[in-house]
Amino acid sequence: MSGEFVGTIFLTSAALFVVLAIAIFYRAIVGPTTQDRLLAVNVLGTNTVVILALLAVGLDQQWFLDIALIYALLNFLMAIAISKFTVERGGVL
Image (cartoon, rainbow, N blue to C red):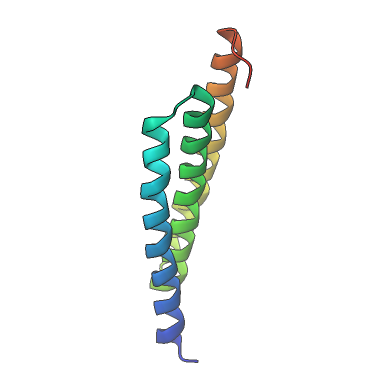
């Protein structure tokens, strides 16, 4: 297999993950509960990290991996902050 073909496979996979992100975004807006929205936002962040990693390989741009790593750390901190805020309000996750 040539390098161009492998890059196309990774870019196609990234496009499929973008379609999946649209469906997850719908769940983040519609809900119906706060826990559903929180989980959808967390999954959307993880999905974004996967898309960035696939783009890094498909486009042969390693700096996408740096952005993916930073975004993963921010996604983790956001999940902890929202969980702490929800528990302090009396909700249980």
